[in-house]
Image: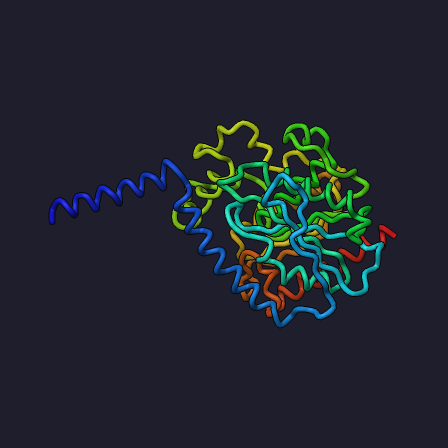
Length: 331
């Protein structure tokens, strides 16, 4: 019995060392289980809000050499061809998520009169930074190249995302508008700045320096897992080129008009507030939706997906209102 207990202790210790120092995979699997459950709950709650005037094209391959390169397109029965095309990339902490998680929300958005594209990508640790942004660029190039055939407006794109997807959307928007940054990241802009009309960013992460992997509790464990997985190294600060993750440090006045929002109880909320400030410092036109610290009920991460709550309804209404201002500018 004593030998068995010693062996068990050794196994547990080895597992702990593996998680802490060798590979992030055990923690990634735990995060995926947690996020998958939350995404399903949020998606199921949106079913009653689904419009009946939206059709879908599913599983279009935007890169024939990439098995993960799939996208869906949702459009209302009556689509004004002058309206901008919203291209949304999902969140999931870079280590989880799939386009099906946000399908219901994007159908609801499409029901407001827009063509909405839902882009999938390869998640970490299988793919490291900046693979998702490179894939997103290929998706945009595909949409631009095939706009007529797909029945979307290829002259007016809005890059959109939630959580980790907000980072990818913001990064590609900066690649399109800041050639020096594009060269640093090593990704070619898929369209011209004139074809990009806006960036729609919900509950995003934009600055690696604001992430503290040494914080205690769940937050520290989560950040350590995600940043290790996405950078490709446990000591992520030593990864060449990863400094370009912090998009706000490379902005120019050419960045497109932006809508940005986060909840008052979102751990990533300060990231959006800082990015908003950085955009405004460049003279970018920004529409923001933030909430006072004492807002009740507290609004957590991805609050906008809860359309049973007043804040989620407001976020959707304000998003549509902002998109309609872009619509008028494209006509």
